[in-house]
Amino acid sequence: MASETLRILPLGEGDVAAVIALAGVIWRHHYPGIISMEQIDYMLAQRYTPAIILDQMQSDSAWWDQALFGGRMIGFAQYELHGRSMKLDKLYLHQDFQRQGYGGRMLADVEDAARRRGADAVRLNVNKHNLKSIAAYRKNGYEVIETVVVDMGGGYVMDDYVMQKAL
Image (cartoon, rainbow, N blue to C red):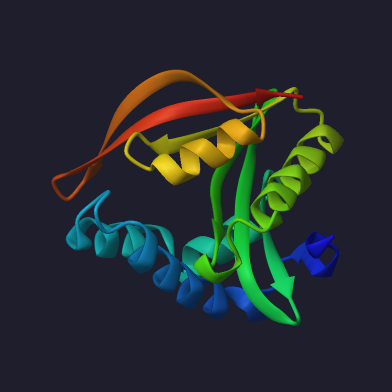
């Protein structure tokens, strides 16, 4: 099985710059056609700074993981406990490693972490036009439970589905 070579480990402080760089590569490849390049740049600047990531890493209720293949970071996930559910805020995998089971393995790892921490569900938001990701989440047992439009400032909104999987 190809996923046997994938390792998922907690993100370390020394890995923050690599996550920020990988996020830029993934977002600039995946999101054109879904959101504008201006919104991509805005969201990257808003979500991926060393201060924000380190603050989340030091929290008792938020976690960052990295996916490694052959010693190379190919993906990452960030999730936080919200009451009885785990909010999967970020799960990204480099395009060269998609459709090989690695994303599903990363999701399963988040779900295991959620169970260990007493959560009864994993929730996430996904852009309504992000059809590849929606299909991947559905394949892994997630279903749409609501739609939301969130003003994120800068003249941008997130027009999302909220998806959930009961654990």
